[in-house]
Amino acid sequence: MNAVIDAPKTAPAAIDPPPVVRTAAVLWLTAVAFGVLETVLMAGQILHEGSATFAGLLPQMGFRLVVFGVAVHLALRLRHGANWARWTIGVMLGVFGTLSLVIEPVQFLLAGGSIGEAVAGADAVWFAFAASRIAHLVAVLGAMALMFQPRANAYFRPALRSA
Figure 1 (spheres, rainbow, N blue to C red):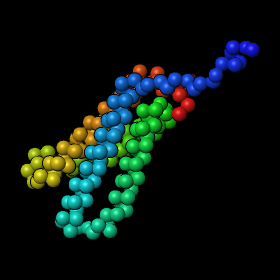
Figure 2 (figure 1 turned 30 degrees about the horizontal axis):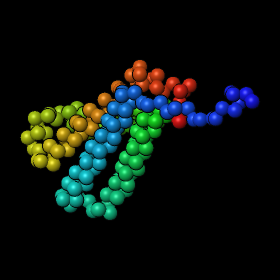
Figure 3 (figure 1 turned 90 degrees about the vertical axis):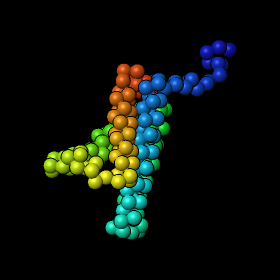
Figure 4 (figure 1 turned 90 degrees about the horizontal axis):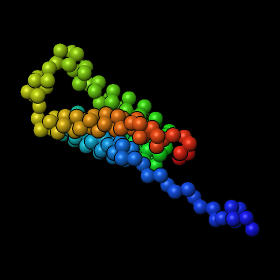
C-alpha cells in the first residue's frame, strides 16, 4: 500500500477573500441598492407627474431589474474569486455604469446650468435622488479601486482560481 496513492482525496481548502475583495463586493451590492432606490424614486416621480403610465415604464424597469440581477450575481462571483466576474463588473458597471451615472449632470453643466440653479428648483425627491446618486457613484468608484489593489490581484491570480 502506498500512502500517497491510498490517501483520501479531499478538496483543497477554500481561500478566503482578502478584505479588499470582500469590501469591493459589499460596495457593488451597495451600489445596486442605491440603483434600486433611484429607480423607485424616478418611477414614483414620473407616475406622480403623470408623464408616463406604469405600463410605459415596464420596459425600462425590466431592463434595470436585469442589470441589477446581473450585478448582484457578479458581485457574489467576485467574492468567490472569479476573475472573469471582476473584469465583467469592472467594464460593465465600473466604466459604462459610471458614465450613465454622470452623463446627465455633466450635460446639464456643459449646457450652462449651475449647481445653484439645480438646487434652487429642487424638491425633497430631487435631494433624495441626488444623495442616492452621489452615494451610488462613491460605492462604484470605491469598489473599482479595491478590486484592483495588489492583494485583490493576488487573490484573482489564475493559478489560485478557476471559478
